[in-house]
Image (cartoon, rainbow, N blue to C red; front, side, top):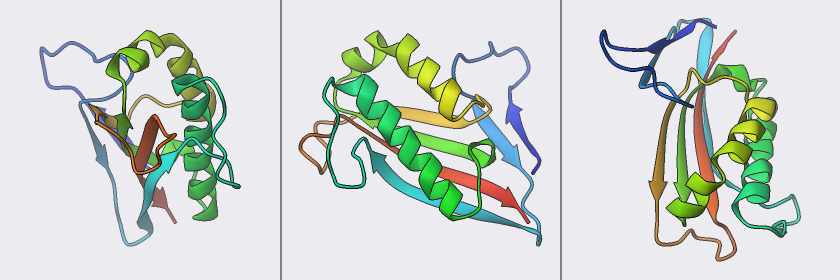
Length: 136
């Protein structure tokens, strides 16, 4: 699959995401849309410890759904993160970044992070949705 991070001339390179992504979608490719994944396991249990362990599980869930479609993290072109506590998210940036690099790997992803009042699951503190472009 061919995708490229977009950086307008003169703009500083963003840290941890891309401003935009150009992805080739042809008759031989397809898009995969991953619904918002929260940090619970297959039995609906959240790990203790807040945003860091929940982010890890949410990212693992994203990878599992991609795999069910025959896709890989390298095919991700867009992510939206919803967090209930912006300060906790920012404070855990290094740990979250390390998990992201381990499980997803690529920062050439158009990304948004939004603080929300709550998520549908009361115990959830982070939810991540993804769009991927997969070559055939």
